[in-house]
Length: 86
Length: 199
Picture 1 (cartoon, each protein chain N blue to C red):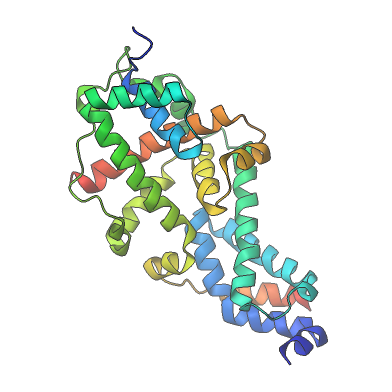
Picture 2: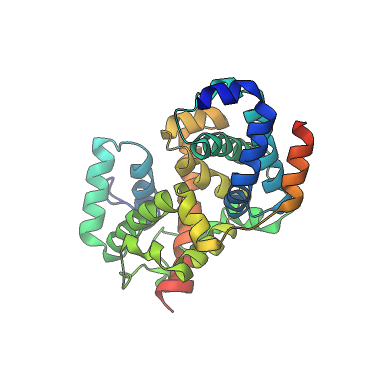
């Protein structure tokens, strides 16, 4: 295989790597080339970016978490903590 | 005025805070960790830490914000521990770490298997998070990740830290970390597709 042609497995790896760190020049070219020929990896990248956005919002927002899941009361826990603090 | 009150009787202040915020904190933790006991311990640890360092709280920020920042650190610690010692008894870890993991997505040349090839999703929008059912699906997909993958995903977003710092804390190489995320996200993508986008 020519150095410039990535497999889809490798391309998705680079798509994920890109979200964490900068790609090298060579990696950028490889990924661009691959995507220009591969609809599946192009779709994957879009979905991966969406997941990135969803996850960063979802994981970080406690109000959101509680809004969607409801507040669970735990009286036992309250008593236990107050007992410990005395 | 407030500051004087905090200096005077920390126990009373903490007690008020327990009454006011512990349910919210517990719910948040439960939702993050998927475990009653762990969630209870983390909330309790947070209040103990707050009690000991209450002199650092100057009453400038909302107590809830202060407590949640301590709590989120505790949650991150929990995931770091989980990452280092995942419970090896669960079979899903094996599936995840074995080379065969990729065989369920790609053929031997690294091309997508026909039935796994990604196609555009019908709705590609962050407003999905306003949909309670979608959030449930996302959560259930997250909970199906093996512990180390789950911990890696949580840590990446929970603390908004740079990848390199997370790697230092976990004592793994950046390559291992993003490869772990790569696998976690392949799995998450498939789960979301089956349970939401293709339904």
